[in-house]
Length: 135
Image 1 (cartoon, rainbow, N blue to C red):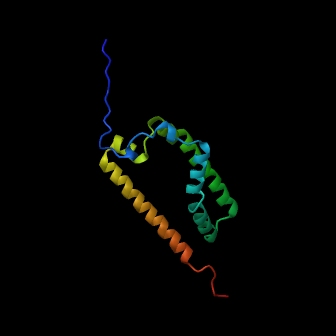
Image 2: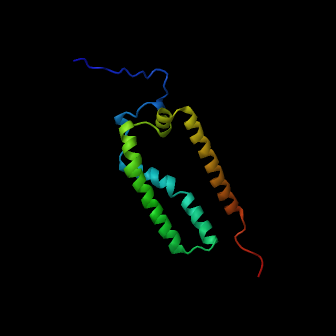
Image 3: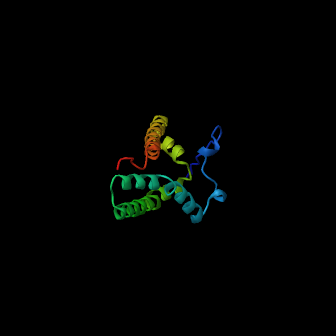
């Protein structure tokens, strides 16, 4: 019985395209810090303030934030994390591996458009006058 061995060639690959070595993995506290920095820092507060300015009740906003963050944590825990732990590849490398270069470019451009619109909305909202001079 012959055993097949697959030789992997890592020549010409950048460090971000290689699997992350086990000695560089971080624990749950690092994840919580990254998650909090990404999701609590700007968008929730700016979008929440926008909803308040548009007349939403504070309880609706808090309930929406609670449900949204619970769903985000569950999706990271149940979908994203098992894939990341198994492959130890970055999102872009994994997407390129399974869908090709064109899909990676499409994903990048979709992110550019989405973040441009969100940034513009934040700037417009923050630059609007807060108080009306009309009595």
